[in-house]
Length: 252
Image (tube, rainbow, N blue to C red; front, side, top):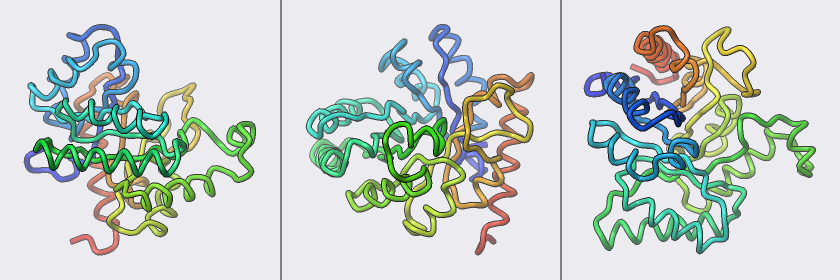
C-alpha cells in the first residue's frame, strides 16, 4: 500500500505497547504495508529504547518518535540531536517549552543535519493534549480556552521555524487557515464512529472529517489494535482518508 497509495502514507499507527519487543514488532510486520509510519511513544520507548526504532526501520517501517521533549532550551536541543542518531522520520517537542526552546532545537537539528549528513526528521510541536478540554486548561491556570491556546502555540511554533504541530482534529480548520497550506498538521485522537467505549480522548473526529478539515497525517492506535481484524481496520481508515482527500478543495 505504501508504495502506491498516498492515503496510506498519511496513516500513523500508534505502537504504544509494552508487552514485549517481539509482540510490538509483530504489529510492525502485520501493518508495515498498510500504514505510513509507526509512532513510538513513551511507553514503548521507555520499555525498549532505541532498539525498537532500529528494528522497525530494519523491517521497512518509518518511525515517528513521540516523546514530547519539554525542558530548558539547551537540554531539549541536545536531546533531539541525540535522537537524530536513530533513523527517524518525525519527532516532536512541546510548544509549552517556549519560543527559545523551540528555536534552539530547530537550529541545532538543522545544523547537525548539514554538518553530519544526517537526514532531518520532520520536527513537530505539541500544542494541547487531546485529552484536555476547556475545563482542564482552566484548572491549569490558563485564562483562555483550548482553541485560543492552541492557536497561540501553533503560531509561536511556526514563527520559531517548527514546520508543523500535533493538534486535535477539532483545531485543524482554524490552524490551517491561520498557519497556511505549507504548515504540517498531525492529528491524534482519531476515532471511527462509535469507537472505543470509556475513551479518554475528549476532542476527536473521524479520519474522513480530520483529513477534510486539513490534517496532513492522522494518528490511530486503539481503533486498530482492538479490532478483530487490524489489517481490515487499517484499510477502512485509509479508505476514509481517501474520501477526505477527495472532498478537499482543489483535489483532482
